Image (tube, rainbow, N blue to C red; front, top):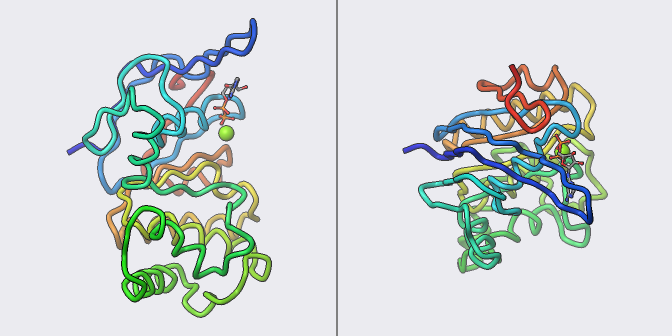
Length: 224
Ligand SMILES: Nc1ncnc2c1ncn2[C@@H]1O[C@H](COP(=O)(O)OP(=O)(O)O)[C@@H](O)[C@H]1O
Ligand SMILES: [Mg+2]
């Protein structure tokens, strides 16, 4: 079964008398366990597209199906539920909660969407921290670890609920190039280990070359 199907997908922002056609009719499919990059210059529509796939922002027109469900017209309540069950997110500024430890940050989505007993949560969090190479850092706070380590924690957090789709909007934008490559490698390893599909956006050619499938955007359409 295809994981993401988009047909004639469009997103238009209207602010006052300014209309921006951010995504102008794109079609694509993304298969399970794939490792995909959306690339293109700033303003080309990468975030808009990821936000629609992640059910953070509804399409203006067209058709969008994710994980077997038509998500084109979800209410905000349905979207929130769908995200919690099916999608993990990784952000360029990491978005860890500063007052929670590394362990608690990874545990947080389990408490939000899955009513697991404490010991089951602990095992699951520890398994994920181990997978991302942070097994012995769980007691630290985000301000006590490096940017690369923060993004490892964010990868663990995105995977902890066993989401089959992880969306990462410019996940390496705030990392140096060596650390960037390591994070992309880590995401690919996680794809291999858990069968999770990753879609990440970037405008960095060194980062995009690590993807297996590349979709290039230009002014809200596929380039070329
Ligand atoms: N909330 C919004 N309101 C109005 N215009 C927006 C909004 N978000 C994005 N845009 C516009 O849509 C276009 C695509 O933006 P975006 O998806 O953020 O591109 P990228 O992530 O590739 O930099 C840009 O012209 C941007 O200014
Ligand atoms: Mg963007």
